Length: 59
Image (cartoon, rainbow, N blue to C red; front, side):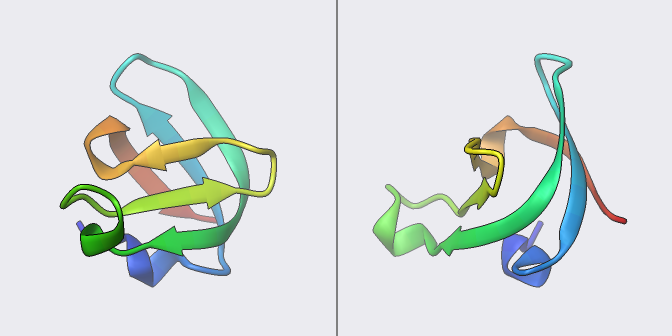
């Protein structure tokens, strides 16, 4: 999954723990800046590593 494609897009994210988040992806972090794993931050203050994300959808 390439999280870079979701940068500056409104999304709905479902995590493996079953939580749902909705918001604008306002930060994208490259793997070399985050222990080898991509990550995003939503404008609602949620940080998500790629391994946390079960599904992500642009809305």
